[in-house]
Amino acid sequence: MAQLNYWLLTLTFLSVNLDFFFMLLFLLKQYSRNAVILGYVLGVSVLMTLSFAVGKTLAWFLPEWLLGVLGALPLYMALRSDHDSNRDQRHHSAVLSVFLTYLAVCAGCNLSLFLPVLAGESVAHFGGTLGFIAMLAVAVVLLINQIGRLPAVTTVMKAHGETLMRLCYAAIGLWVFWDSGLVSHLLSLI
Image (tube, rainbow, N blue to C red; front, side, top):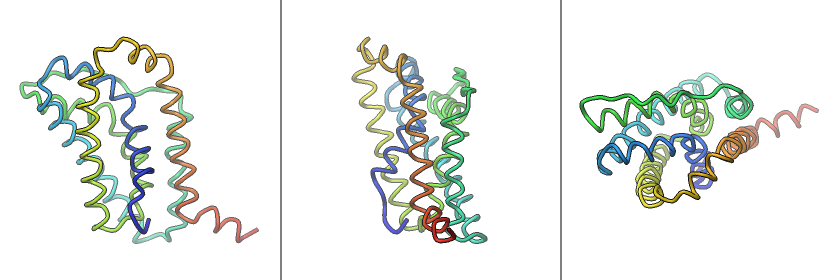
């Protein structure tokens, strides 16, 4: 990825965190807004940094087009039938509680979806990506804090959230296939 693709980053962030948005509703009722923001941003930052590090390690050994195969991970997430557990874990620190809850709920999704998206980024671009995603995380918490009391929002998310999340995962997987050059490489072999 030569430059930051803000649309892809936003779509990836939203799809990875869609199920956690419900948890944010509950966490915002339990803890202060600032504690939720800090714990959430820390969790997102840790998982994105792990995804980036693993992606860069793989990129040293494999050509970029071959890394496009990692697009299968988001497609798998779109098609799998099991769900992440939404365990509520209580700890003495509100920030630690939000951080650990986020890791428990979203670690697998974050690693499998952000790894292929971040694999081709440079270190400089990753810094910008991390800053952009952190700003999205803060904005999401502030937004959810405002709309969390609206019953219509929770009804729609409960009815269609799973389907929307799966469609986003599939779109990300297909984008990784295309953006990595895997599709054009395979077409050139035909």
